[in-house]
Length: 159
Image 1 (cartoon, rainbow, N blue to C red):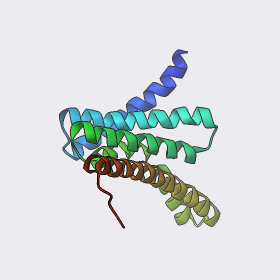
Image 2: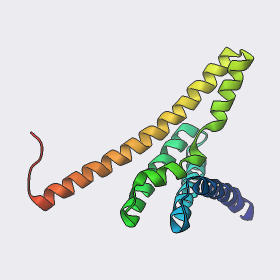
Image 3: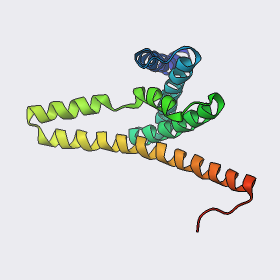
Image 4: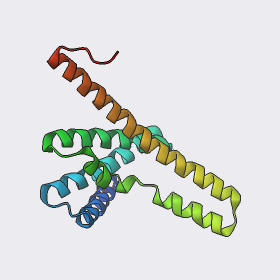
């Protein structure tokens, strides 16, 4: 039991600390830094938990982590009256496929075309999953806000 908890806790702690370091770099202080970093740690927890639930399909893991993180950023933006982009920028740091980009460029420099293409497509798939996760949540939030505005004003917008 303790080993399984530590397998989840330590990577999330490392993600939190990495995000905290970027908060220092971007001069985000106080509670904002903690909340941005918490978003990164929780997104990494979602990544880890979906990995045990879905097998080894890491592209889906990244997608669900991005969906969670986008929802977290939207909620925090409303609660703290700050842009959601700030929360997304910092909290996405642990999810960036940096190792894939590095390995892709390493394969390119070695002249290993097959490894370059395989790693490159996988890395682009991860980046696409992250982008689609953010796009879905932000679109749903925008549609929800538009419907709420229509209800409040009682007007129909559009053609």
